[in-house]
Image (cartoon, rainbow, N blue to C red; front, top):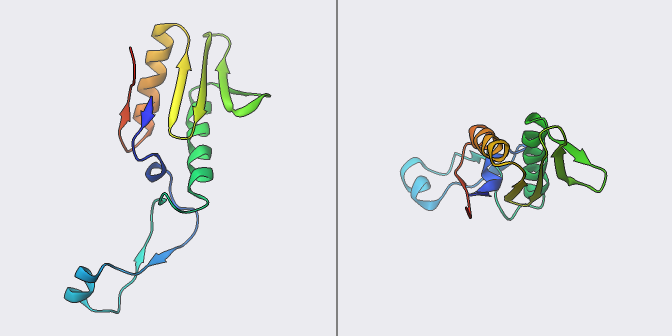
Length: 118
């Protein structure tokens, strides 16, 4: 599963203000600033914040982190496991449980989720 615009799913953890685009300034003037609500890709913390959110979503789906690494999660009862690699979830296990996990993850994300493969 590939999450389109993954970092935009994670809320910004700091108050960051940005200069509005020139088109905005030409209409409303220079007295305004914009406040970021979601992460941008080039921010150093964006990946860390996204991975924290994605890991939490998988934990909410009853998967538990492996000692081998926090990006590996599993539910031994359902015989399902998943690797989280940046914007990709790579679940494996019985089709019924993998499908349920895909639907759960999709329900938790605001942006698009694309299933790659069969």
